[in-house]
Image 1 (cartoon, rainbow, N blue to C red):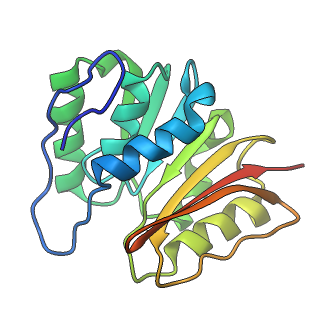
Image 2 (cartoon, rainbow, N blue to C red):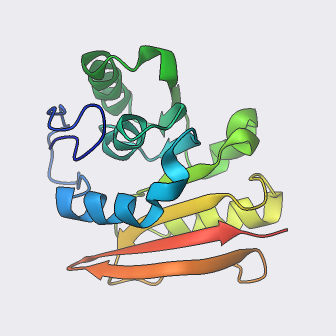
Length: 183
């Protein structure tokens, strides 16, 4: 896995090993960032269920000013910190250990975030639960961009009164939703 574009283009990232892990493929990552490119520069980003930090690090390489990397796994956060150091993004990155989606209510900085990148484990309802938490708790600011990668085999639900679906794209077994929060 490597950074696809931006100032750190081509640099390789460390990843976690294991059958239950499913990092975002480079082709999918490139397509996601092509769709949201105009909004990444100078954005504050949250990479939720971050794994190795693949998506958030791509955002930083493409000009995001800050990224919060959030995961429950200590091993994942260790790899993220190593990748942050390798890419020299220490001043732009913060790692946080918390259980998602419930723990997000304790993350006060979530309201400062311009873009949420969420890649929860496949085969779980966590994507829908996260979007529900955002809608019911009003944790994110208006016009926040939310990118959710999930299994194309399951439907991710969201409150259409709180979110506008901007794009929906399938990539083999993966599906990406790009949403915008409303008032």
